[in-house]
Image (cartoon, rainbow, N blue to C red):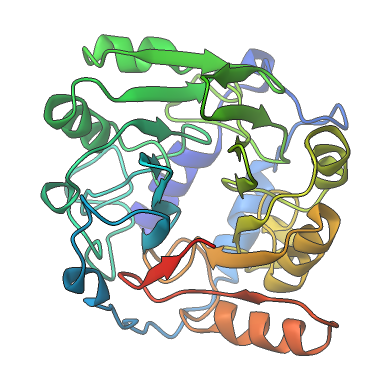
Length: 323
């Protein structure tokens, strides 16, 4: 109990006077120490399940094959389209923590390891929480793929530079990284940032809208529900594919402003007017109180209550073709 509380305090709170960035509604996501204690006092122990992994990817030559994506786990996707390979929020470490022996530990291994990925052109990072910005994974990627370009939120460039990671660019909301064949736009979502005791909201958070010549793909990072997705659609258009979090929401009175539940994830898909959506941010780490298998079960029910919605959570390691 003591260690869980200590880690929660370390990851969630710092001095409010140091906050810099806010959400588009002008508000920060702050919970009081009293709220944290209330959550810990009434914390329920989730039913832990180990989800299946697929070895489907082993049937293919990932270097030669094009136009596909693979959910590696949590918010990490391998996307290859038009010969360009992207890795989102890569975390291959055993724990989502600044510590080696305490903090959230993986329930499942990565569906692929870095050695299995033949080439990486771009790495996108949505925000600096340890389950999304895993500095050890980024260092390994930089070493294995020295030409890889890292796209990070404003405020996180210095962290990567301190670790001698090259080719790093940082972005405020709506700023773009563009080449002839691809355009990345950093978009607002409702969340927060923090890695240490005194850096709450000192870096930004967001989603990545990836535009190709024929259509777009959107990765929402980590978010609560807000009007940001309507704005994204209005400014950038509707993506064909959207990767949207569906886990880490319980207890909802504590988590809702920063983490969507499956029903709100469906609303995000509808707001974006995405053709297809895929659930992420569940089944890899125990971060909150819901049972491991609850997010996809609630997602399936939410989808059944909506008309013509194509939204599911893939199996880690499954190869899904991009049309």
